[in-house]
Length: 393
Length: 159
Ligand SMILES: Cc1cc2nc3c(=O)[nH]c(=O)nc-3n(C[C@H](O)[C@H](O)[C@H](O)COP(=O)(O)O)c2cc1C
Ligand code: SF4
Image (cartoon, rainbow over all chains, first blue to last red; front, side, top):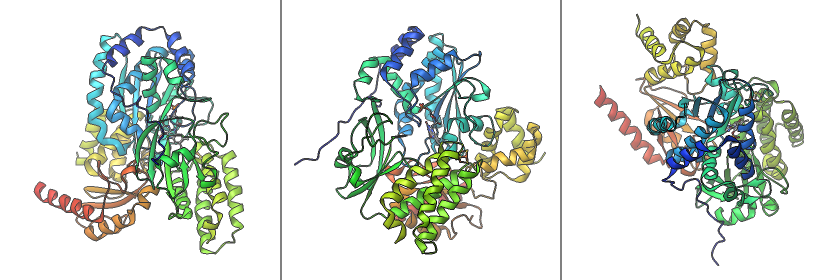
């Protein structure tokens, strides 16, 4: 019997030779119509919180003020995510088309690509693409300029408000929300921040219409999504799949036949153990049961040779280093979690200390200022609940 | 003017003297010197007319804006989960052996600094490392040794 395969999609990386015409055509379409199409498509952000993209553009368009900005978030720092780089390498014109249309709708005259410094080697490629793009904007009478802003090695700068602090020349410390960037973003001006993949998907909608996108996926999770697949798999890489599949289907396709758990959504996502493969679907939080957020689409597979203690220890070490240190629950919490599980492992603390740590993650979830500190609980709780034995012995 | 003063002035002329210019200027120093000295931070503060504590606070926040002495080639080995699972430790041993330094240290001739870093985004081609801005993936202890030898030679040619 052949292995069951999930359907591979090819919307994102498909080369669209008519992209210049698509841009011109879309720039001549009334704003209201474009926004409606985007909302109807069901496209939600591919970078984190899954906010409806059409609505984000609309809110920014309606925000008061003359100066506005569009930012493409290419900070891609979530462990196990590497698809944004590939989009920028292969089809950056789709991302730029998305930014141009966003500029027309919101009135933003300036755009930025916030590129993580680990991808600095991409700068020449992008600069070349940008000089063509700027000519194209001129031909279409669009007053819009895009610049690259290079990050400097800080995962937290992927969080949109930290990203803007960093662009303003400061420490990348997340801001309080509200106000949201749509109202007060970069330099205090209304700003759209979109993930690279989100922007690339907008191109599909401009070219093929909302329906083509909406027909893919299920319920609240529409369209296709890029997954970055790594770990214990014979076929690591980037795959475009339809949302809504179960983890079981995923593992049947990509596992090494000995898969014991899948980390969905990177270190800040959830661990799904084998016994939950069948009941867990992959998509945005909504009507689906036992849902796991795909966040950046990071899927890391672990087989039975892996120690889940080592996995958790590695994640916690990551969070401890990447916490911006601004708020106590996250700064001290991450440190205590690392110390705590190491002490339990060495036998210096009783196994019941894990329950104290679980409570601590619950506190972090409600008191930490941003998504980093709040989501440490996701992996901690799902790993400790399912692999408690491995934490202790 | 000292060399650093000239560099800071040039960078400020290029990137501007506003607060938003700070990170591009700091990156410019790294590009040239691989680390930002106290002297450079004070010069930048003077040039942008902000407090040197602000410059220091910003620079030390970012892991790629090194403020400790660094070699000409900064090696950053990814230590996040997939690279760890796929043999990061053997890669580090091979580098430590080839360079005769420990993680965190710089060779006495100031050519190489060996560091670990968080996810580089090459998990599907693990293990991975950066040398300055260049990416190396699917490493083995042997390939790492070759890469290092190549860099050592490259340097002799330059000087
Ligand atoms: C800790 C943290 C890290 C994040 N990193 C990224 C990132 O690397 N790339 C990204 O697009 N969004 C990241 N986000 C989400 C952004 O804050 C923001 O929601 C997103 O860029 C919005 O774009 P979207 O609506 O297109 O998804 C991160 C969020 C948090 C809390
Ligand atoms: S939760 Fe963590 S990363 Fe977020 S603001 Fe607080 S300390 Fe910073």
